[in-house]
Length: 443
Image (cartoon, rainbow, N blue to C red; front, side, top):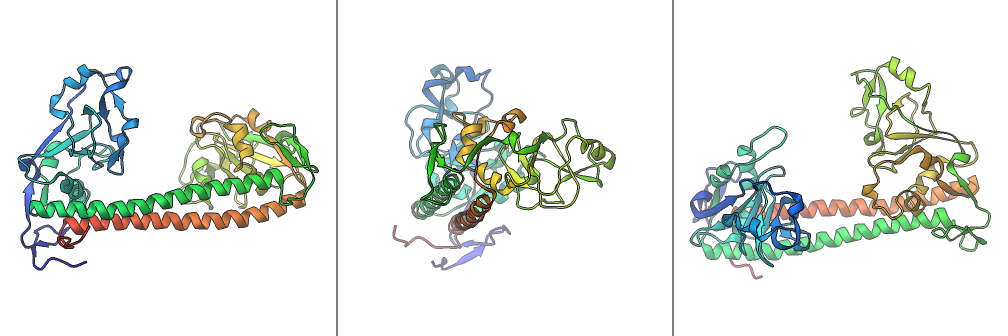
């Protein structure tokens, strides 16, 4: 990739130099720009299965839109605001919340309008190529403009006036067309690679679940005698395995405090669901409670090394074996499980909770995201298939090796996606700021 023959100082530190024949244009001088001002009492009950489309920020997916997910509004609502009726080749921009999300309208299946928090941009008198503007707004140049002009403290926004003051780089129209075509081609290639990586990760996660499910329901010996479990969703299990409920092989199943804790800077660690999601407890992020409060809580719920923690509220089903020595208390969102010795090892139970055995009993026909609370009574009635302790150890050793292998591939794939996304962002910025000359690139 070659640079332009000649450059000049841009006057903007963020991009340094620009091609000699390029200049800047204020967006408000060459661009039609409108957003919705209120909806005059539009209610969700007015959304329909047909009629004009209503675009929201939630519909923005990688610069495109899945029209099947878009709400519809009555025709009379659509007619209320003709100034924001969409046209093909419009560029849409989110100006509140997640600022700067972009959408290019390359296809319009019918009448469509905007919800609030969005701006529609289109050229006046063919002053610029819409797809070029789309990529220009996706560059480091516009991101820099957002950082300089955004307002708010916790909920950020950028005004229509501020967007209009943006100075965008303005090569010739034929050059803008070439840049847009080139970036369409290159970003499509990158996006295709990213989607393949994402699909690979999905398949690897499915493989991981299948490997765990096979091991904790059928064992490792393919020639082992089998018997009917008597449970339709479980099918056959090894003949020497035992079906039992969790309450029969535990000494205690109890959740943490239901009271609002008193947080202090120095005291006893107080763990919540967020604290057990990482491989190691981050002592810099956990909360602390007074020693006197801890002494009261441990009379009811005393976690000890070798016990198991299970998340029962919010993100449910996260498990962690206590392998540290310091004392701590837990919030109501966590459940403490103390196993009977020589019945079930905690590491084996962790894998059971990652298998279809857990999914079937907890989620059943419900979506995982719809289950936000796992009651203690349900945990106590949890049905387990128990091999001997020595066999449990073999299965744990096998699954730790296999899941580690799969997790490693997933981690590498996620890193590759991250690098591809970084390359995509860098490429767009390099091209639309003139660091790379694509005028003679064949597409």
